[in-house]
Image (cartoon, rainbow, N blue to C red; front, side):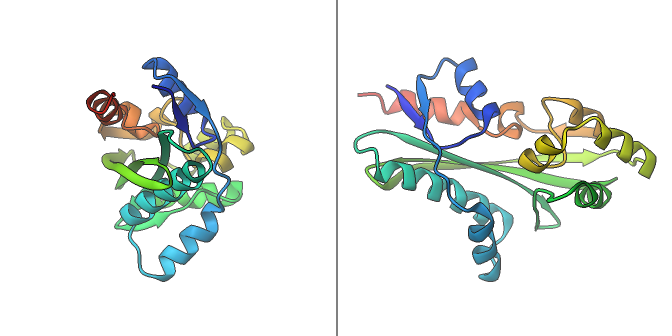
Length: 194
């Protein structure tokens, strides 16, 4: 069963490859920032935003690909139940790290599978991360290691790269933190094979 991944995330593609899930990538090209703005204006919390974005991506691609399973995914950072957006500049990235510094936050990864333009399954996973208490100098040294393009695309830390050094502890599934709660996806696919 070949699924469609409605995401341009290279890391999500790598996770599907690692678990030998046959797939192709068709990017949804939704305006995530507009969707987030709209949802925040309605008082949505980070979990709801993550779920909605995964569903919108999945359904948009599903509408154009009849009878195919389409996997949409989204991950957000939640600090005190407030959404932490991806930075738009290096200065903003530093400010975000300062906010997360020495505190516990949650990384929420949501996935949605759609078929024929309707959601047929979804799942959200929340991981707890505690950032070390780092000096401004240590935060700046960390930021120097990351290409601007990576920072703006994926957020202030990449657990699969140098981001691991920022944390005192991480409680959660590594694949989920990287963007796909793959075990639940595999369970769903295996239980629904024709």
